[in-house]
Length: 351
Image 1 (tube, helix red, strand yellow):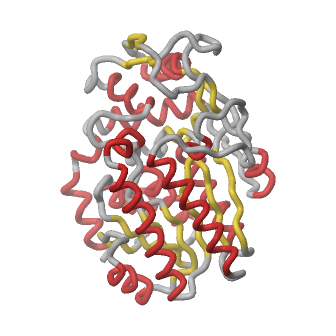
Image 2 (cartoon, rainbow, N blue to C red):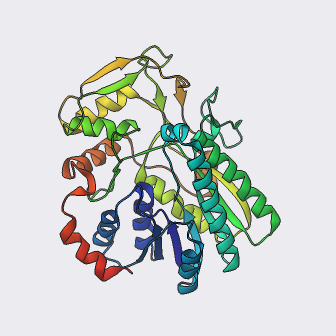
């Protein structure tokens, strides 16, 4: 069974490639590498010792995408590709609306043309906006508060309308909470461009000496230690959730929406302390003012995914921190190092 993974060179996409290859699927990756590195795919090949096909391509290239579908008997698509930075989306809203929505429309049109109607879509907990209560269930009120989140919310509605138009379509929409961690091998992990936007890569870059200290935004929330609480999920658990969603969607029609999280929250200071334990070094931080729009607590209700996908997040905070540190300490500059020897594997493995 052949699965097309858009954005497969990215953080979550590359880990999902591993899970699919190890489960025996044929994998075809499309990625324009605008926010990722081909080296991650080289390392996926190293880890799995399996070949797959990679096309450096933008989803806006309809002709190129049709060529991919004509060359491969694609059975389903896992769609990660898109612009993804909340802060950047506020500065570049037109780019986010145009890129994320148009590329998905083109993908779905090409899928329909080639009679491929099974899709797993990468959404986000940002669609919940500023929830008043946690845990957050799939039927909680929606209300994204930034252009990135709104593109996800709009695309969710588009996909629901698409599925309603024909019983051929089977779609799983996965709302992620806060992915962290890395593959146990230390070969692939989160590799943000520039200064990280998310907590864990920021902590790990402070630990490795690339950044001076962690800014903790707010210490007066009504939480265990006054800092914000979020639901952090290991990226391998998240990748396995995609495998379960794919298995589910292959046998049904319509749309299902699932939260992927642990159902448990950890504070910023708890995350820093956990990382200090596994790294064996102190992480300097400073308390800063709250950021506008931040909330005290946000974590998932995962009962639906647990029951319907037979999926549960298995890795705890210690393992998340251990794997993040293994990746960062082994690759202090991300994928910038040791690329020449790996590239030979890629040349033998992919188009």
